[in-house]
Length: 225
Image (cartoon, rainbow, N blue to C red):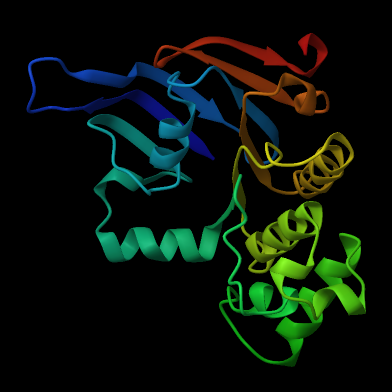
């Protein structure tokens, strides 16, 4: 699905002391599965996610998605890819505070109507939010419920790729593993990329990419995790 060739990202290009967030490496990612990307702060893992998701353009190199060169797309074309193909889950849920959980999910849908409300309700229900919870605003939900609502929002358009940047960092142990169970199930038919500092949440990953100082230090398959 993704083919990355000699990707680099350099910040502070106009300064004498340039910062290399990505140092030029190749990487191929599959069509589906749960892939962990792990490393310390400043290792380049979030920058890699931003480049793959078209939120940033790399300084040099190529990113092919299903044979399409993402770095050559116009802004409007990148927006279309993000809307139709990608979903995003972040450490902070970024829910709209004055909307109910259900409305927070349906507002992200490409299409409205009764079918979308039905799908959003079913998603939230499968994540453990009942009829009382889905009518509540985020401030009335627990941290785990808010994050599960954010995941449902990310899934409402059935994205082929789900990007999750530190999705469990603000959660307790039980909620963190519940979130990972949801992402693992979704990865059976889609690609889920989880960026994290926490190796323990990747115990069921199909592979783990380890990053260090802007480069890939190791790629471990499921049997090695």
